[in-house]
Every structure is written in C-alpha cells, then in structure tokens.
Image 1 (spheres, helix red, strand yellow):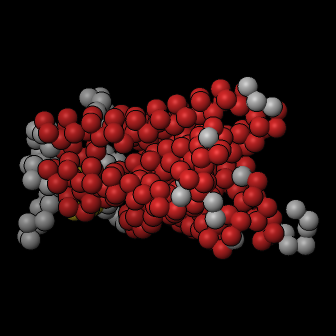
Image 2 (image 1 turned 180 degrees about the vertical axis):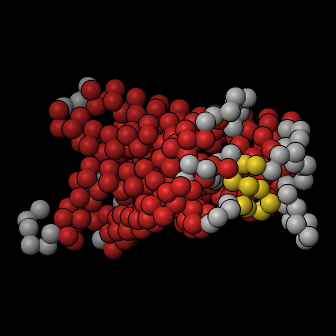
Image 3 (image 1 turned 90 degrees about the vertical axis):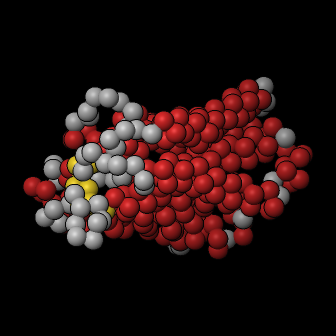
Length: 308
C-alpha cells in the first residue's frame, strides 16, 4: 500500500501468532537480545584483552561472535518494536535494506567458519608452515573477504528488486529475506539466477571447503597418536557443531523462498526465531565451554578465587 508520499509499505503477517501474547514475547525477545549482547561481547572482550588469546583461531572466533552481535543489533530493535505495535508494517525500501543486511551478515558466518576450518587445517596438517601462512596480513585479508564479498554479492538482487513492481503487499514473515521475491508481479530472471549463484558462492562452496578440511584433519589425526586426536577433536568439534546447526537453520530460510507451496505461519515463526535467538546464544556457549583457553579465562573472570 502507498501513502501520500508514494512510499510503499508492507504488512508483516508473521506476527499473527505473536499478537495475543505480545508482552510475553517482548520480554522473551528483549531478554534474548540482552543475553546475546552480553554472552558474545564477553568472549570478544576476553580475546581482545588477553594476549594468550591473540592467535588466529581465537581472532576468527571473536570475528564470528562479533558478527552475531551485528546481525542481532540489525534485527532485534525492529522486531521488538513490531511485537508491541498494533499493526506491523515496514517500508519496502527498509525491507530491502533489512534483507541485504540479514543475508550479507548471515553469509559472512559461513566464510568465517571456513576461515576457522582453514586455520585448523594448516595448524594440524602443516604445523611447520603455520606461522608463515597464518600471518597477520593473511588473517586480515580473510576477515575482509568474509565481510565484503557477501555484502557485495547480496547487493545485486536487492538493487534490482528496488525497481520491480509489487502485486502483493502482505509479507509472510517477521524478517525480510529473499522471500520478498514472492511479492513481485514477475520474478526477474536475473535475480532468480543470481540467487542460485549466490547459494553456491556464499553457502555451498564454504560448506564443502569446511567439510573437505575436516575430513583431511580427521584422516591425518587418525594416523597419529591419541593425544593428537584429542587436541584435534577439542578444537574442531565446536566448529562442526556450529556449522551443522547454522547450515540447517539458514538452509531452511533459503529453501522456503523458492518453494511454491506456502509454509504455515507458525512454522515460519519458529524457524525464524531459532535463527535469531538459538544460534547467536548457542555460539558463545559452545566456544566458551569447549575451547580450553577461553574457558580458563571465563573461570578466572567469574570465579577468581578458584584454581583453574
């Protein structure tokens, strides 16, 4: 629908299940947002402050957790506002911007996980070359690629969609994503093809690379002693748990954008809440408990009187 200033607004239908218990949902969502900021920021600060954590693996973990903070900060304020609102609307331009931020930061997570997998691969499989390969310059290059490449690639479909006529103004969701393509009168072939290319470049290739590196790591460590296998499992297992969890949640979101059948609103809401609630809280807990050096610093911070 258009107002007098010719600004196109969309109605967010994903809040139908929320409206009845909106104050309860607000408390839950606000608490989740605070926990996400606190959990992730605590570990990022520990990595920044303590020099023993100034290693490539921990730098990539800090970047991953910082990415979760950025993504949550980009999404939660609007969601909290909508939960309390009588009518949930968003301008089409703001929806496209949210889509761009959501997908670029979400895709960056796969690249950061790939960088972490590469770091573990070099550390375990090529230990003598590790200091040369994982220099500060190379780490910075990997971080820049992880954030810039997805942002540039997701900008194309968003830019093209800005000039496409809409035939439907009811968006079935609470966060704008590629599902907005279903509102177009005609789906642009460029956008549709680009979607598959982006799926390969931003998701499939990083995931395949991660699986390849860990398979190589497990093959090499299997031939080594028990201590080597234990250390490899200690550092690689958290990454794999995060990857499997995130791939499932993000893959569902990309899948429903291209399914012709409509997904029930309740199912959409549950899966969306898992992406923005479960995963950002899950990451710092996994890395805080499973990464030995981070766990030590957390114990020193919260239990200073106990011997770690």
